[in-house]
Length: 290
Ligand SMILES: O=C(O)C(=O)C[C@]1(C(=O)O)C=C[C@@H](O)C=C1
Image 1 (spheres, protein in one colour):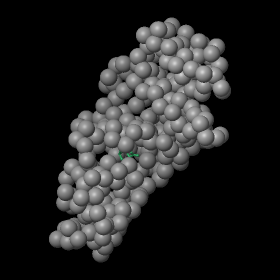
Image 2 (spheres, rainbow, N blue to C red):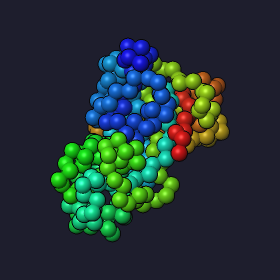
Image 3 (tube, rainbow, N blue to C red):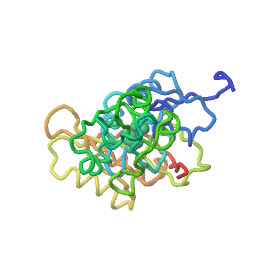
């Protein structure tokens, strides 16, 4: 198929075989997938209309929120979440095939900062004196190792990246906790939603909210707005507003559709209380096959 035959362009944190690529391929198997080096570049590509969607990591079960994604969405972009993808994350240690015999003597480990953090205990106990190097993604690390056959170095990443860049997995499943999943947002300029088919079928909405200044008990009031309406929240987290110490905005994930009467009412009441509320839209959750 030629590029111009593809209907949608989708930016993702590349290169090919990154975890974001696998999530993107899972939800867009037939679209034109375009790799970008950083999360802001993916987000800008949608904002500037170069692509229809961008897929970016937003939260990991071991490491928590991906601050760059949330902060960029709040401070720099005006986009909507049209879907989310949940993927199981398995991290493996891999080396160039020319270095397999020497892998216990590696002189450097390369990976994305989140992947290094997910394997912290393993690296601490097994390779405590070996320098760790951050890459723009796990697949970028695998590619770097592939491009340097003479160096005794390793990458941490998934089995697809080992395959794609022809590396050998020398120690599989080195992530510190078994339940390792990452959540990815699919972003668009339109407040639409990807079709429900193949999703889990339950609607989810994300609000970004700031509290009125100097009001005691403001957060308590916000939570009561949801509580008395029996609106289920799956996440609430604060991030710095970057205007001074103690200034925060909140990300709130709601297990309901923004068009439901109770959610509309909640938004109105929050605004009446002096909060600024921005809805990132309602979307469905997709699982990538394990
Ligand atoms: O480096 C990759 O392969 C990515 O897609 C990025 C990323 C992340 O930002 O959390 C995605 C999933 C894993 O948690 C590790 C890294």
